[in-house]
Structures are given as structure tokens and as C-alpha cells.
Length: 330
Image (cartoon, helix red, strand yellow):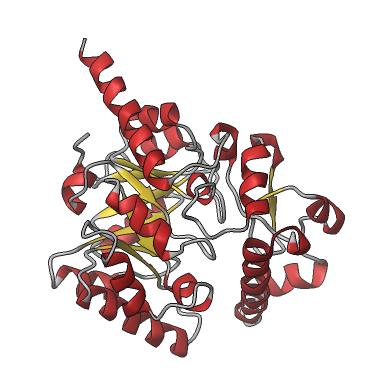
């Protein structure tokens, strides 16, 4: 199961539990890493959803596993206060031994500088080649290729289209989106990806602190039940289509659409959506059907049919990859 990604990060299985707001709790992250994949810390979830100081949260996970952990740094310059907080969080993660970082939504150069100084690696979320090229100009070591089947802020291309578009860039590529079963995982590695990132599959695990209603909705949903809504952040986000979603619709209203395109107002419009969605997503994840506003999920729900331990997910996917490799070698 060795790939360019597993060599970079020092893990056994080329599988990432992607950072998720609000579902990335320490127990889930640690369980994935201990099983041989790598769990990625989402610092906003750690602090404001699960109530852990970042440093203490990392040390809590270290009591479960001494294997590599990752860290998610959203580098969008939404405000000076936010940026300074993220820089402090990155420093804490580095001080606590984290060496794999995933950046998104901005220029990752300052993260690259800090992480490379201590021998770590940085991968960046991309949906198109132009963003990949910009990230590589700033020194990232690999790319998280977010396709059109992903949960959250999905891309527009298929996994194969992204691989064909980015395959000549000379860095490890991670498939993100649409993988919820072992066979699809093995197929993505066979296709040429160096690893796979999953989010939705790991929400439906015992260690994830998401409400049972949310997990059940993932198990019961099919790919056709995933729709894109603009009402979380102003740009399309993949969610499960519930009665609530059908009632309120998926399009931003006329005023907000204009504001999101306005050069001076778009920052404030995005801030409005962000603050509103942070509260709604937290409520939906932790309170269940009473707060069923938004349940983020990707089309990988098609391959998820039970709630199981996160470690068993990793081991089951690893066995599928080993079997696939053995078949290919015959």
C-alpha cells in the first residue's frame, strides 16, 4: 500500500479522514490515525464545538495514538484577528509534533514556510488546475483534488477528469469526494491517485460525535439525495436534501447574489453566511432532528450502509486495496 503520499506522511494506509466542521472530534481523528490512516485536526471544531484547547486536544489524542496526525489550516484572509489566531494554531500544532498540513481557500505560503522549516509537508485543496498551479508556486508538496462528488464545498470535475488535468504536475494527488466503500477506494488508487480523503464515511462511525440522526441520515441516503445549496456560505455546498431544504430552497436570494458579486460587499456577504452557517451546522450535527437545517454530505453516501468503528473502516479499506493489488499482480 506504499504510495508517494504514505512516504510523505509516514503512514500505512493511503487514507485521510478529512477535516470537517463540526464533525472532527479528537476521538475520531485519533482512531483513524491509530488504524494506519491519518486523521486531520480541524481547529475551529476542536475549540468551539468539542470544547478542547488545541494543545490539550492534541495531547488527548496522543494518549490514544503516537502515529501521525494532520492539521487543517484555512488560510483565507477573512480578518486580521482570524489570521493571527490561525498562525498561533499552526505554531501549536508544530510544537506538538504535527507534520502534515492541509491548507485551503487562500495563499498557503506562510504555512509552507513554517512547516518546511521543521521537515513537514503541506497539501492544498484544489478544484481546478489554475488553483493547483498557484499553490505549487507557493511551495506545497501535494494536492487534495476535490471533485464534484465531494461533500461540503465540492468541485465540478469527476475524479478522472481531475487526475488527467493535474497528473503532470509532479506531486502526489489525493482524491477527495465520492468514496464511501472499499471498492471505490481501491479503484481510485488503481486509477493513479496517491491517496484518498474521506469525510462523509467517517461521520457514520461510532467515534464521531455527530448526532445519531445525522449518522442515520447518511446511512439511509443515496447519491440522488445530495443537492447543492447556496444558503450556507453563498457558494454551492453539498447537503442531504431534507424536508427543510426542500421548503427553503437552495438558491441565495436576489440581494445576496448581488452582494456576493459586488467587489466591496462580497466580503461582508460571505462573513454573514459564514457566521450563520457555523451556528446552523453545529446545531444540526449535535442536536439532531430538532435542528435539521443542514446536514453536509457527499455522494459517497451511496456506498455507506452501516455505522461502524472508524478503525474498522480503515482496516476494511486497506484489505480491499491489498486484494486489488494481489489481483493485479496475478
